[in-house]
Amino acid sequence: MAAKAGKSEAKKTVLIIDDEPDIVTYLGLLLENQGYAVISALDGQEGLELAKRERPDLVCLDIMMPRKTGVALYGEMKADPKLKKIPCVIISAYESAYSFKGQAFRRMVQDKSIPEPLRFFEKPIDIPAFLGFVDGLLNKAKKK
Amino acid sequence: MTATRSRIEWPTKALFDHIPLDIIVIDRDFTIVEANKQAQKTYPDWRSKKCYAVYKQRKKKCPNCGAVKTFKDGKTRVEHSENIDAQGNTHHYMVHISPYRDKKGDIPYVIEMAVDITDRVNLEREYRLLFDNVPCYVSVIDKNFKVVDSNALFRQTFSKRGARYCYEMYKGRDKVCAKCPAVRAFRTGERYTSLQVGMDKEGNKTHYMVTAAPFKRNGRAVDRVIEMSLDVSAMIKLQEKLQQVEKEKMEVERFAAVGQTVAGLAHGVKNILMGLEGGMYVVNSGLQRNDNELVSSGWKMLQSNIDKISSVVKEYLQFARGGSEIDVQMVSPVAIAKDVLDLYQDLAKQSGITLISHLQDDIRKAPLDPEGIHTCVANLMSNAIDACVVSDKKRKRIELSCFEKDRTVVYEVKDNGTGMDYEVKKKVFSNFFTTKASGQGTGLGLLITRRIVFEHGGKVSFESTLGRGTLFRIELPRKRLPKLKKAESKK
Image 1 (tube, each protein chain N blue to C red):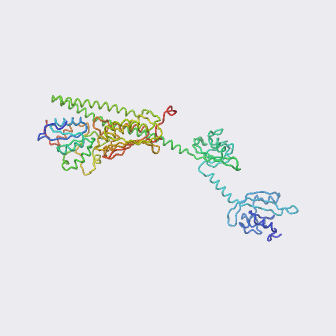
Image 2 (cartoon, rainbow over the protein chains, first blue to last red; image 1 turned 90 degrees about the vertical axis):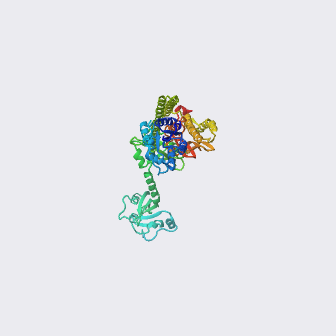
Image 3 (cartoon, rainbow over the protein chains, first blue to last red; image 1 turned 45 degrees about the vertical axis):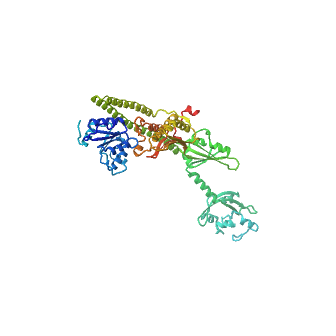
């Protein structure tokens, strides 16, 4: 699954980076059905390249990925002047005992000036909440 | 006869003065009428004085005076005398009191010859002090094991009513103990030490380390043995406590691992759950759109997640088997390493990885579960290969080492692969955590490794630098290794 949906000018683009193809397929279809253009990558390195090339409107990021972890990728994006304005949300199965939220996330990012991600979604994600958040963020784009 | 002039003629006088004894002559009034040079050294002011005034600083004659008795019965006697000089110092003497008879057979004088034994008395007191106050039990026994002397601590601890023999006192037995170090000391004249369990007078078990030192009083045969025992009960208790604590610690470690597993299980299930939700959503979307391709892709998602459930459950069961008995055998640690090496030789070659081994051949066999340890080393090896495969290094290398250091069997697997960053390191031992692309691992390998190593009383640790590589180490201290079952240990 990749950025198949014809990318009209009006459509906002969401980049999904997750090493689980199932998650990419699922979220991709969900967002496409919601009227967004979706592009995706299966690891952090590919994701960073794609973000640089496509400049998406939103990045949905997993944490545990081969080659480059979500935390490392987030740090690099926020350090890149061209990418730092792109909003990021973290979608990860880690919570509670292994929290990646708030301070725990901060600790892992080397550069302390980097802001926290916009929001954390825990797998399996609450779909209405997730879609509501995306719609709100991307300016109430086309409803289906 | 006057007291001021010597009545002894030379050479008798010379002998009298030079003999290494204090010699004095007293008359029936206890007046000193003669003193040799030796005697004058300590008591220079003696002339015409009373002996009790000079030697005891007394005004009246001493009670129980030996000279009085000798004047009366004419017998020679030997006595211990404690004297005080003019400066107030105490001196000890062994005094030989003899009558001096005149031609008529009367006894006008008594001759006292004294050996200064002050040094010896002090030494004896010193030894006695040591004997009574040394913080161990001391007893002197004769050839029949009868206690002929003992110190206060020994008596306080072991004296039992009617007990006279050391085996009665130490252990409440009625005959000589087996493996008695004193028996051997009597026989060979050597010193022996052994650990014994006795019983104090309250009936409590007492562990003591006894040293039996032979003593030859006449210089020929050993006729006494001195037994010196140190109470090591507290130490033994501490040792038992320590073993208990070790055991409990291992239990706690095992529970902690199980706890993490449960937490990890939730994570694994969440991923699968999301995959299943996704599959349903894709199937539904396909049905709504009449898109068969989408339906079948959703169906595949459902299938693969169901497969995942079954493989996770299988591995989880394997993990949860923890606590069941491991199959311990005496095996060569190096042989296990060699097996693993053989197993991965081909795969490494295919992946362009050089496999190097450092195996210390002279390691003694150890009680291990060979299959379990094989699984552990193989897991580390498999991880190392994966780390090398995804790395973009030109020369990929894995080193497998097996050696013994400080009575600890060590396995090390070192790769120059991707290495781990902070986040990955933190999660290394958590269940279902895998950085491998999906379908390549459930993330249970290291957890299983850790569980097996725990069951052997050992630990797994690692060092890793992102981009440089990783070293995993299994340490198995021999003293914590599991015990062999009886049948096995007899082999």
